[in-house]
Image (cartoon, rainbow, N blue to C red; front, side, top):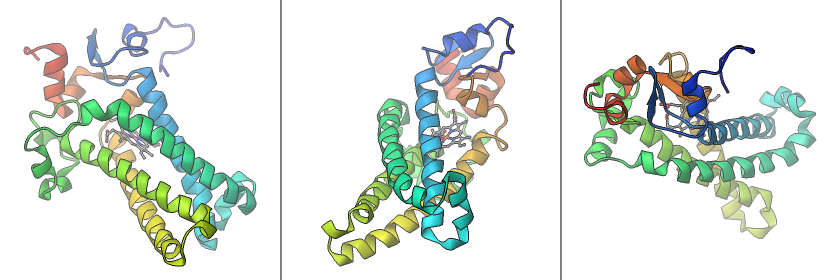
Length: 229
Ligand code: HEM
């Protein structure tokens, strides 16, 4: 997961990012260790396999997506298993990241208000720690969404085990949840790549630069590098 060219010695920060987190190495801060990154990419890949196998089942409008996996029949059996994998990995990610995602006093009230819409304005967060309130909200929202998709998905997987009204409700809830999820994930990818340059590398090499941390997460920079930062 390093961006170093073959033959070049590995950057010490990238080596440290294999096992450590929240440390300063040279001019880089280690943000996500290797386990954290592997879990995140597992969640992302299983999410997209679930999405692209589910959409052709949902409507023929997206029937062409089935060809990516060898046809609709493959999608029908692959989709629930991709969903189970996504749920299992999301649960692992939930407990792995939970400590860093605790809402600070006042944060919950603040981020459930109009501020939630200023998610992109990281600059407004002079004390943002490792994650700001918007990121924490996203974390809890996707965890809850995953639970909704899992439960309603199980009902549709074993339809004969549930009453008719539960099946009907599950179909509607599964569809609404996946549409919200898709919108949230598109926004999340935008924020993690184009909107916030320097963020994506935290999920590839595991590190970020000091100026990035000073701009987006100054409280975290102070915790990691000391008061002088
Ligand atoms: C190609 C797809 C994706 C990309 C490029 C991406 C990128 C990123 C990046 C760069 C971060 C680190 C942000 C930071 O350190 O401040 C991150 C964090 C995170 N990712 Fe993703 N991600 C993707 C897919 C997903 C999916 C599908 C989910 C969940 C269903 C997810 C859930 C999270 C969560 C909960 C965080 C921590 C909170 C946050 O930073 O918003 N990601 N992602």
